[in-house]
Length: 262
Image (cartoon, rainbow, N blue to C red; front, side, top):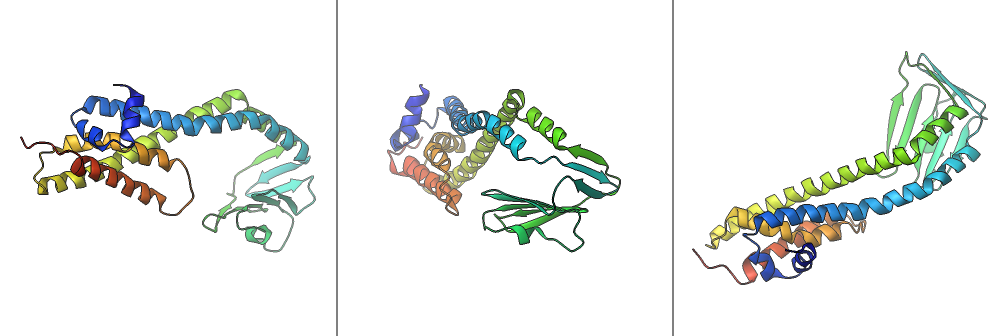
């Protein structure tokens, strides 16, 4: 059976979905091909953006990074070569370095927008403000931690991290993470919804086995899985897609032509 034929019918054909209840081997193959296909649609545009933007990022860093020297000794950070407080603002982030002030600095005093990430480095700690949950994470510098860094070292790190080999490895890791997320998350969704409908079918005295209900679910997840990737940004949308999946299962199992009792 063709993948695209199954994809097409899985979107709307409830009777076809019910008829696949014994087509278990292809259902698993279709499900894994579908998640692989969807993960590719997510990863490929992101990968192209990273590869195309990497030279720009390196050039911008080389232009904007000042000639500084940083030294960490016994949990105390000292930065020279910067007029401090050093404040660098971007559209969605603000970076502050101040290792000379004697007063207490907090990262939120430098954040000017609800969507800005804030990063503050002082002589003894690092603070990061997350605008999504409006929390501040503080990491004190541990005593006994010693290192030195300067402009040349940072540019060297950037060149190594943003070369084609590292970007390819990042893309591979990102692909695996997305694929695992789609597979595990949707299999759990299919399992629990199938369990509900299997119990429901027993009460309605329909001759469905759990394996058959689950097999139908492997096809019926198609539309919710595709719509989930739209990232509409509305709260509780994952619940909406689960409800949509349940509706599709209901129509496929109970409202299309019903199987004869055996």
